Image (cartoon, rainbow, N blue to C red; front, top):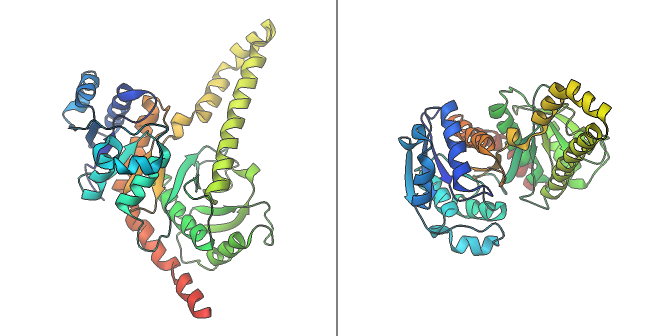
Length: 349
């Protein structure tokens, strides 16, 4: 286990600016005082923001750079500027071994492209996947991947995503054998594409992995708590995620309207306020902030662009935990087992 991990921070990313990024990092360090940071961005603005966080100044090194990746910038353009932007330099710090992980709230596409180019995929991994923790009705959150990094996936990709997701769940939720399911249009074995059915067959045949493969799940069961890891191609996963987020906003907005529609409703709101507060907390994206690019030779965490200080702190905490628990080594160990499938398939052909 690594001690006192260094985290590289893209201080210029995100909608809320340097002030919120520094407030979030300071909050993360109050929770975990062993953390140290390399802050990439405009030195003057970072120093001004640090004036409000004396606990952070001694634990941080500022590395000035003028370049910033715009929120709408195309990945190809961002890559060409990688050596002069706060996002690119934060990733380079991981590549050089100067930091154990990088955290950015900037452009997701640019971050994915830069990270993949600089860090490369791990041996045995064909494509990295974007994974995140989502709230459920069960005792634990659920790890879902891929959430948009790969719109089309073959059987090997889905199997590898399952292995990576299970490794992440073991670290993030302290589970010995996470329950893994593939997102499908039905739970019957004959449902779904050839790729999904073949991936299920492979995972069923690998009882030696540190996971419990439980077959298929449907979109209406994402938040049921019946699975610890849900695996999908990036297209379906992103659609499912955005649908779930939209439904959560719809429900909360509908309740808000209902509780303000009359005097009696307002009285009812006062009575149910504690329950409403619990619901709001459970659905708050800041509570589950911090998506991870799994499968790279290094840890890169994406914070939501609109995250508040608590959300940023949670993203930093995710990065630190993955470094401390050696997530890349865990994935490599499991992938070495599962890749016997590739060799067996080649012999069969």
